Amino acid sequence: MSTLIASIGLIWLSLRFIVPKITRGNVEVSTLSISAVPPALLASMSLLMIVSVLAIAVLIIMSLSGTPYSLEVAMEEPMRVLFSELVCNAAAVTGALMICSCLLPSLIRVTSGFWALIASLPISAFMTLVFFFKVAPVFFV
Image 1 (cartoon, rainbow, N blue to C red):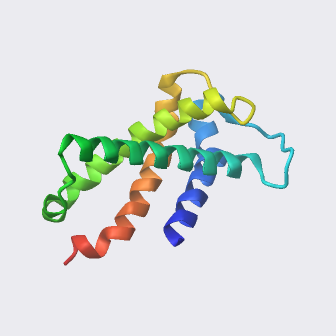
Image 2 (tube, helix red, strand yellow):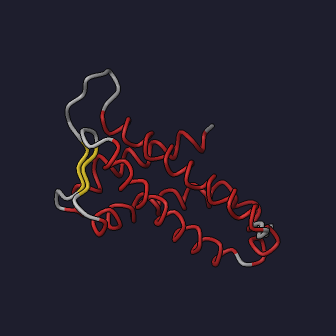
């Protein structure tokens, strides 16, 4: 539960303060709210939900193809795992931003895939940081 709260909070922080500065207005979250939930918080929860759906789909495809994720390799090479986690998070967040932009255009606006990739970098870095703190005891044993 704390991982979920940390992820939503860091994605909200990114969407509210970091992403608008680095994308120069090419990725925006709406400021108009029709509910008590702030739009950036709603966008971060939507983004995390779509990233989770994409991750579940990839894991199902991997298990159906017979290539399960190897935890032994993950424990032996932590830097490689963190880098691959960062790349996977960046790909998933970029896709989720594009999907959110198509499904919820009144909530989040992305002008192009390039700007979605740029916007995904701080979000994926925060998600990788949360992952690292979650599995850090495994790496340092």
